[in-house]
Image 1 (cartoon, rainbow, N blue to C red):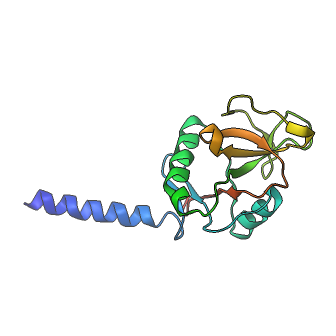
Image 2 (image 1 turned 90 degrees about the horizontal axis):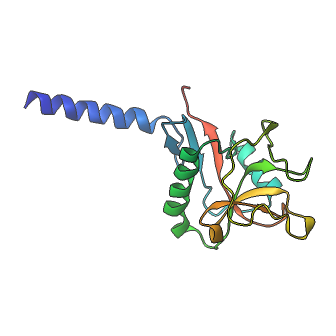
Image 3 (image 1 turned 180 degrees about the vertical axis):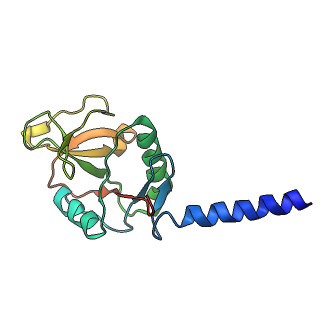
Length: 161
């Protein structure tokens, strides 16, 4: 019985510590030490999304691994039922400086790992310079017109890291 008590206390401490990694409304990814949010009801063009995240001391999501991509796909799938519109999700890369060369805008580093959907990037009509996770591509990446209104994913480093 004593062991069960210790296990319960340990579990409560773990949950309490885990819950303190991120602010309310954010989801913690322990593997990467990041917190992610899909702001409820917020949507905008790419620049507005960037500004919204920045105002929350975060940035548009920077996806650097398959594990992170999968984590965000799961987060989208959990969240999308509460969203009003069927839209895509902005993430933090653009190719507006050089066509076809995507950089993480806040970090000014080149995107090295891609999760493109079939036929992407296509730069349709010569005006698609911002990166998004697209619904019709199963949340794989596509390039989109930076002026289109979409949902977005913000990312920030977990507290205490």
